[in-house]
Length: 396
Ligand code: TGC
Ligand code: FAD
Image 1 (spheres, protein in one colour):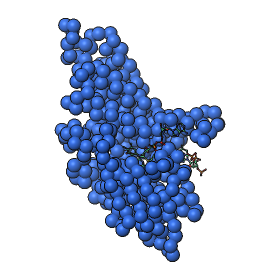
Image 2 (cartoon, rainbow, N blue to C red):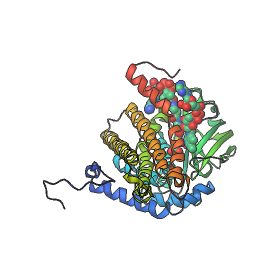
Image 3 (cartoon, helix red, strand yellow):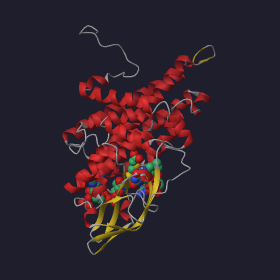
Image 4 (cartoon, protein in one colour):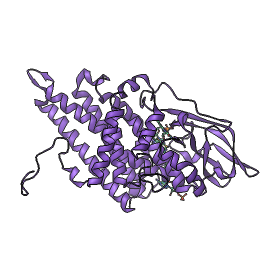
């Protein structure tokens, strides 16, 4: 322990002492998730990535349920009721292993479970949430369509009334967890505007073919959703979800998790570059001794820890109930953009080894190409902020 008037020694992995902002409970959540990822993801993830698959996803989901990571900041129904900061720390630790694992958790908790928790009836919550919190049922969230990605207001998937039933027809694409889901939260146009529907995936007319040939998020299941006259009972509709604001409300929660998660990917790449720079010798000295390498490492560290501070600030606002959607856009825009830059810079520090799966940096950098695009592209978040700053809508 340093004397009270002496600052703690400089820690290259926590140069600003951000850990001091965390409570004992926060640190316990972080350590639990970090240990789980070290045990269950890190030993195999490069192989999964190379194979382009996530084998054992159902078992992984159940284990994530056991550690309380699914629907982590939701209250009741078997959810952990953790704080937003704790949920963020969990996202960071999961994405430090691989963005695909964080995606699994984001979609399950922040999108599918959040939609049911926030907009569902009591019966719907009782039916789905305990199994989803335990990882026994996996959920997916179908908003994006082949012709409507950034502009979901134009969606074509339609839900029409037939007696008391609903009949859904349409197509969703790029849906995380789609082929392994037991329930799909599907957003569709109705005569009263956009609504949300809970579709058990064994319903006749529903199919979820997996999307192959991805060069990013390869350790993640991504699928199309095909809805061909899918007949659902009246109680399949989410009663509290009216209009596009409902799915966008879920996105706030998931985007918030990404603000933290992206810094996890960046942390891993920074650590890899730092270690490499200390040990790789060229021109008779470690490359970390060259000014150009030090400039890279210093800039990476600055952006990494600024990003973590930003995430923490937004987490406190979410816990206080004061977080605005524009502030989430601010965080998602900055942290994913900086994270991918950190990973690309780390790649250069590792030279040729940087492109090898023996090191994690290229895997993280390619994963972040998806993270840059999903949950609102860079441009969408620039436009959200642009509109908030100027009062002028530049989307259309
Ligand atoms: P706009 O007219 O602005 O808004 C329509 C209604 O929604 C309200 N609203 C929001 N409410 C809550 N949170 C937000 N962030 C909101 N943004 C808007 C708004 O107040 C309005 O309400 P009301 O009551 O007046 O009707 O809508 P717009 O059509 O102009 O679109 C705005 C825009 C472009 C920002 C929005 O469409 C958008 O965010 N587009 C990006 C689409 C996107 O992010 N898709 C993500 C799909 S899910 C996914 O990618 C999961 S990947 C997860 C993983 O694997 O980890
Ligand atoms: P487009 O909307 O066609 O955009 C193409 C380009 O045009 C982008 O650069 C965009 O920013 C730009 N652009 C569009 N409009 C404007 C404008 N007005 N001004 C300036 N530039 C503009 N979706 C789900 O619903 N659920 C999921 O679980 C899900 N998981 C995903 C997993 C992965 C691996 C990926 C890659 C995507 C996933 N998505 C999911 C889809 C994702 O949300 C969309 O890809 C994203 O919203 C962008 O839509 P798009 O790909 O159709 O691009």
